Image 1 (cartoon, rainbow, N blue to C red):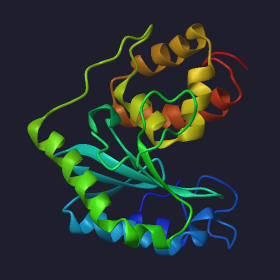
Image 2: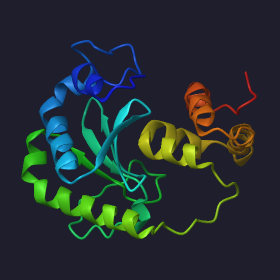
Image 3: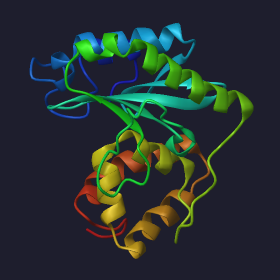
Image 4: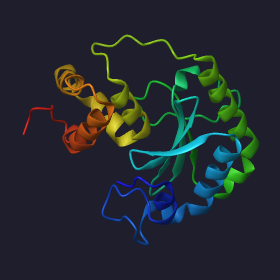
Length: 206
């Protein structure tokens, strides 16, 4: 995966064999992605790279992350349970997603048309970060490490696959990730575990 922000806008995320090639999903949506980037930077967000994607932060908290796919590109909000969605533009990543958390674009020109709305949603999310407001923890059989929560928020395919796992398989990943104290180690393990989660397997299954 990439670690430099400019690589995303010139080569892609580095998570598949189409990286840096003409068939990379980012190529199709480059104008829209660049427009989203400018809106985020103009809003005062700090630009970083996480999980191979542009991630924008405020007051040390993740606010939004980009994603580019074959059929669309997305601006996904962290902590979506807090968002009021006054303009009704947020959509769920999939049928098992609990909260609507993304603005989905199928035309790069949509970003410019929605600039004011996007900026207002970013401002709302930034205000929650400034106030230290977080959504209440929802009831769950297992408490997920923060790094896994962030990874699921940023990766729709991974989120759907993880939620489809049996409670026991989910717990196997939580136990494995919780056994290390370093966030960077947990993030590395999540990336390593991704193919197994997609395949419906637990952490210790072959």
